[in-house]
Length: 425
Image (cartoon, rainbow, N blue to C red):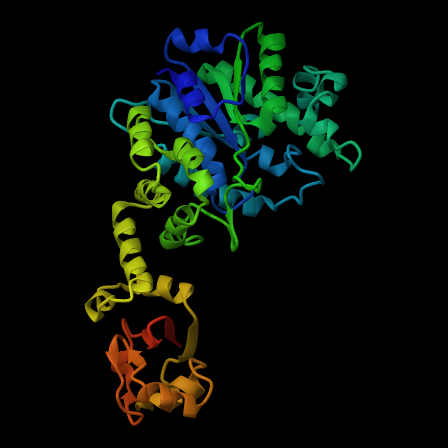
């Protein structure tokens, strides 16, 4: 399949300008997507566009990532019902540096494929003064033309500053610069970017007398109509320090059955034949479809090692027969993940130094049980374990040796109730 056929099969083609099919068939093309660094990491919502570049790359073309060092300073009105709050230059620069590393990793060199070109559009403007911008850029489009775009029309009632109104000019000029300096003939993005992208094709037509093309993806939504890319806790980030690999994996595992076919086609790198065969084989087992996608994405975005770590944490949390050996195999980072997923209690680092009675630990130093009487009854009922070892006496003493990696201790009250005690300095 060529690039457009691939997008159509995946349900990822929303719109395209005339002539692009023939242009891409003529040979290798360069195409870009812009990313404004308004957040400290990209999210899986942004990853839709990363997939677009990856599929473009796999079709034999040159992917270009344009980081919005300049446009991020302005604020894109597209898809917004009110003015954005501008970030400081320092915050934007930090975000850009980190996101650039993410992009290079996600689109990194793959044998036989073109390595991505990563650029910063601040370089297009840093030597340009306001008069040059108004003469050389501002003259290219009429106000009437700019007002016809949905990103502008939809904001006229609620208000649109000149700053955000000018965003369209910057994105259009970006495309022209990339056309002139890098032979870039294709700009891609989400459907909300159609107006900005076609302003760029118009720039190139008017100023260079040349032809450029636009491709957009539909807005990805869940079956219930809600926005893709968020969980109950908020955004799902690509950065493992903001969304752990375990939380990332669980996002896909917990997806609605009705969404898994769409999600698979958007995010898998498996072939059409393999995916259609898998869907036919597992038509009555959507949970396995989710597990396969969760595995593929966790390995691709985080690593095989991170995926194996996720499985260890999953086994400990959900397998009632998980053993002490499985608990002791967990590293400090994995125990930190467990602590984030179950009720956890902090105790002073030296709280166990002289040993603490198990009843006091359960009822006073933590709230694992409501009272000392409850603690004694739970122990008598053989319900309490510390690091998978049953506690048989209410005289039992817990010392610092119980802290795994000098910090974590798992306490269980019955088969279902797991708690983590965390020693803090």
